[in-house]
Length: 177
Image (cartoon, rainbow, N blue to C red; front, side):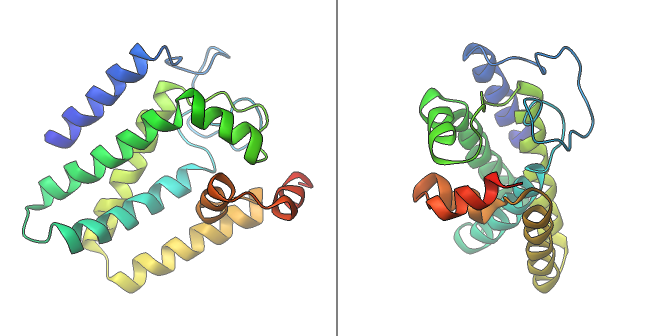
């Protein structure tokens, strides 16, 4: 319940930030696999894999830091962190950082439907990690990272690296796709 309320508040803030509710193309796709202007505008794309992994990581952090709290509170904390990231990710400072430090030259931020889906993907990852053995969650995280790396030359690891410490050789390799 609290997790849903946090997501709704994030949705309202994104509206107040004047983020587009859906893709400016005028429609919503379940899956958008192309790396073009439709990326981060629809329900799911290759970067949805990284949000699932966020859920794995947030579950581990909540288990470690909030072990005595009920699962609903741990999930709400994870949703709050993911929602905060979605708000920050759609701020001018991060949008500009993506444009200058990564291969996302035309990135304009997420649509609201994509941001809400990203929060949902994180929650799905969190709930998976809560029920699966740790080894299975780790194996799935590595598999998702390798799939994204093979298909789009990007993943959560490279995304964090390129946002915090851009490496020209990696950007050149990614651009060669």
